[in-house]
Every structure is written in C-alpha cells, then in structure tokens.
Image (cartoon, rainbow, N blue to C red; front, side, top):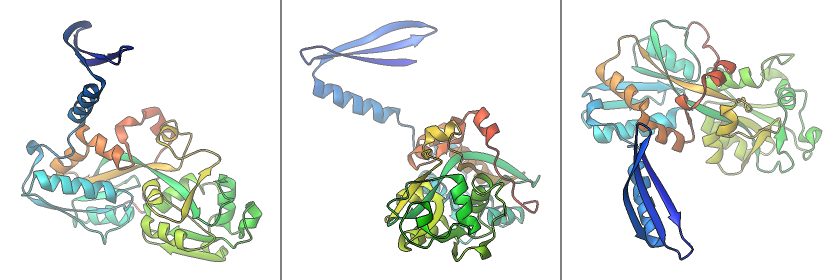
Length: 330
C-alpha cells in the first residue's frame, strides 16, 4: 500500500513523506521539502492519478451490436457509460431504445429477445433473465417552488394527499392552494417504488379517481417539469432530476433528508436498487459492457452521476430494504 504524509512547519515549508507499506512494515522512500504552492501542485497530480478510468480497457471491447432499454431512472448512467464505451471500442454499437422507457417494458422486451439489456427498478421473477444489480437511486418528494411553507411531509400526510383526503395545502400549514397530484403511469417502476415505500399499507388504497386535480407523466423528467410549472403541484422523482430542474423544491420525509449516508443506514427509505438484466446466454458484447458497468473503475462515475454504487451498500441494509417484484412474471 502506498501512503502519503504531508507535514507543515510554522515557516510555511511542508515535508512530503512518501512511504510504501509491505506486510506491515514501512520504508521511507522520498523526503522532499517544498513550498506550499508546490505541495498543492503535487496533490492535484496525485489526485488525478488516483482517479479511476472513466472508459473501459481494450480487453473489454467486443465488436458487435446490442440494444438497451428500460428504466428511465437509470438512463443518465447507462447513456454516459455507452458513450464512454464507444470512445474506447468504436467497433461496438450499443443503441439505447428510448421508446422502451419503463422497467416493465425493459423486462418484457428483453424476455422477448428484442433487446439484449433491460434496465429495471424492479426485481424480475423470470428465471430466463440474469440480474446484475448496479447502483442505488434516491427518490424524493417535490413540490412547486411557490409552496414556501412546505418543507417536510410525513408519510401519513403524503398518503392522505394520494388518498384524496387532503386536497388543499392550507390543511398542512401552506397557502390556500388546491393540491395537484402528479404521478407516473402504471407501467413505471418508479411508481411501483413509490407505492411500496411510501403508500404501502395505506387504507383505503390509492385510487386516482378520488383525487380532484390529478395528472400522470411517462418519465421522471416530465414529472419534474410538470410540478415546476403547476402551482400547488406535488410529485416524486429521482434526486438527479429534482436537482437539475428549476422552480421546484425538495421536501424531507418524516424530517429525514435524502442523502447517501441516510440511504446506507436505511434511515431514509425512498430508494431502490437499479438492475440491468441480460438473458442467460448473452452475447460477447453484452458480457463486456456489463463487466465495464460493474467494474471498480466505474464506481467513481456512478457516484459522480448521483447514484450510490451497489457494492457500497451493506448487505444488512439491502436485507432490510427488499426491492419490489415485477408483476405478471416479468
């Protein structure tokens, strides 16, 4: 293991001690006395060298073509990784089918053999498909920017809004404004996540016909824009879309913020594992791309795009937070 120690004296001169540790023993290799400015340059260089590569190595290249589709929550990550893969492996063609834009559609199209990778928020029960868990995605409740008094909602309050029993923000300490509920369509994996972790156990169960002002959108991005443009609106989206959309506000749930630390401890429960599925006997390119996505070198990219690498979440947390099962044998 390589260890870097930096010591700073009162005269502004720093000492860099670069050590190599083998089997519990340490040996000082270099001692250099440099000015503070040079220390900063050295640190920047070291950090850059330590950053993992964002593109696959040539050993993961496979000249062929495959298609990918499914969960829109995973689209930003998969889209970026496909672009990186193409830069290193120009003979490979990976196309993202944006018309296959839900977990259920991704799983069913993969099972039919029309795509080679299906992205899903949900766990498939189809034994002909192979699961590759990749990352956790954090979801949040959002309200229109004009709802200034609404900073936190309890799960009970959210359930009453989606039951249709709370219809005006004045009932929750907000302004006298009717509530517009913005939901995802029934094929959405994100909606299944919301119903499991937020609406589960709600009595009576969710029924859109009971809500006075109600709207459904196909993607998380469309939900974010609808909430941002509709006074009094509420919805739920992944954290990335919430942070990249103006004129909306993220509210805490039961006073708990949507942070990676709170997800890893399962204190914040509105999150799920994102999966990429393949068939049992995938092509060489499918195998190569999945290996790239799941490689140690991709973990920095996963975190940088706002996800949590799957391997950073403790098994105990995963056991406490089982993912929803896809319906209809998907």
